[in-house]
Image (tube, rainbow, N blue to C red):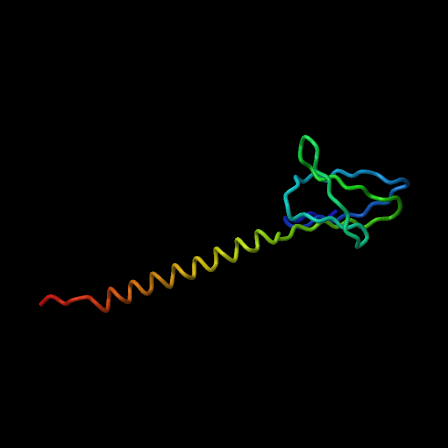
Length: 104
């Protein structure tokens, strides 16, 4: 078993298909792969833990947490807003320094 903040991987050998509960709460962005094939994640339980249907046989299970399109869009808006704010502040400072009057 390997558990990181953005990925979980483990291997299973099952005689019959089973449901496996992963001790990690579901959050949009988690994807599960069994032997390289994407499988659905169920999280409709009291704890909100991820549940996977694993087929019989030797299985390599990988779960990856990645950015959703909405979060990538929000990150882009945040970056553009920060750049625009910095440019505006630099412009205002330039105008202030340019228009500053020296009192003698």
